[in-house]
Amino acid sequence: MNWDSVFEVCYRKHPGAEAEELMRFAGEWSKPLSQAEKADITGRQRNPFPVTDPLHSLYRPFDPGLWALPALPLPALYLDFLSYSNGGEFGNGERFFQFFGTDDLRAMMLAYEFPQYMPGGVPFAMDGSGHHYIWDMRSPHGSGEYPILAAHSGNLGYDDAARVADSFEELCRGTESVEDILYKS
Image (cartoon, rainbow, N blue to C red):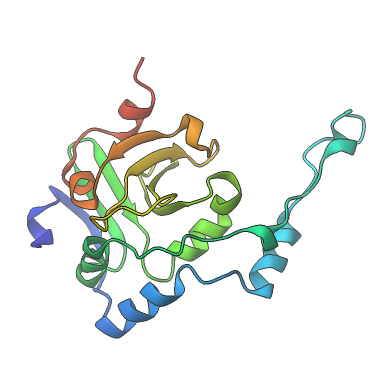
């Protein structure tokens, strides 16, 4: 695909990932969590309720050792995009993209605790206003594409997410902002 013709605006293009990097990334992004990753996630958890709140005694931290990452391949067109720009910032109309690169996707997925709040959801970009673009990988699709949802980073969950596109190309060519899609009255 000619990515230069897909986006109206290129705010920041990164050098493309080499074939070896893409192969490594495609094979490692969904590996089970390492002990260090589990320890990091566990170490960040804090009881959000003050000791005087009745909910304080009910709080239980979650166990990242129970998380399972989707064992499905990433869309080929996304990998093609990463060979064009390994991350970067682009726009079409009112739609803005801050794409995660090969070193960022897994880190962002774990930092925002997607396996806890949206199991099977894989974030691959943000819109610059706190909204994630997320593949819904809860079930395989024969086309190699997955529905793409949007959800705010402070309100992750399938109930409050909105479907934005049915494919990576459709998402990239779209011009409507995520906020307009999510918050239509």
